[in-house]
Length: 120
Image (cartoon, rainbow, N blue to C red):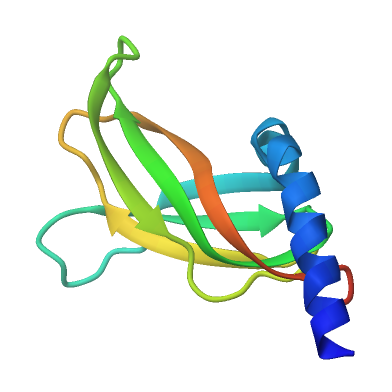
């Protein structure tokens, strides 16, 4: 029975994979702001990522791009949201602010599927 369940999940992953790229903007919503002051030498930003997909996901990778006042790139870095995110759930991350950046563009670039549908 486990083999059938695993095979079904694998088929679903293969069928859903082409749609993931198109749906990332609909499935994941990122919000951010300055992190509260702390004893770090450099300012930080803190962000949350909401999972509006029908999947429980993990290892959500995001690209953070700092933008200058004229919307040029001040730099990029890769970050990961913490833990599993169930459908309708949120996770967060904190990263250092980028020199010269006045705003940020943060996008989900990849994730791993944990399960479909139900919240476990």
